[in-house]
Image (cartoon, rainbow, N blue to C red; front, side, top):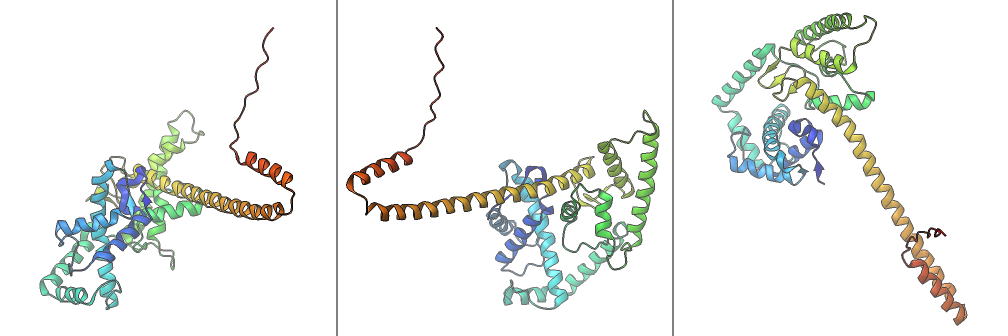
Length: 327
């Protein structure tokens, strides 16, 4: 089934759950050599994966390069997650052949590879104090869409952060950085909102919702330390625009509103199709009943009945009444 990519969020292909599932399926169907990373595969082979992905997802032609770039980024990350799960479980995934699995085990056990993994682990831990979360393999964007649908309204960036950085079992933040960031955000946003309201026409007049949301997002960008390697703490990958947090929130809201609309359209198509089937069945039954009755009618009545049914089956034309002529 072809999935439609909405143009408002095409830059964030990696954030769509449906596209992510399509990428995972593509990897599983085509992974037939023991490459330890996505980047190790020749470009020509990576393009084969992309072409298979194209069969499952569609997009506008002017978004081709952005989609392709995001596909390879997401595929690289997803493959690493799949390998990590396989190593932690200590068994071959059911989508992988024995030869490929044994080849990977051999490469993973090489001293040079293990040294690289250890170095990368240390870099991730020290990189901006590390970054822990509770979302698992689900993207922040998908969490935001689900939360928006659950609440029945748009969600704020700090709400998304709490959703993905507070442990459900303890109600505590996952680490000191997340607790400190959220605390600093609340203090900064409260102060700026108060200052902005006080310099308005009236201290009692509420702040415009759109302006308040922009202030909220800017405060988050400030306390999160801005963009770092194309990412914002608590959000993940964002565009290179200055209003990246605003853009992210708009994309989330668009995604959460488009999904119910798509579901409604699908439901309407189903209802119409069911109605058409019922009409065809009723018409078939009626024709059979008429055929039985006609056998017992005298010839003149049969002719009259046939003329009547033929007139009923002819397309109707709307005839506009003539306007009376003026004397």
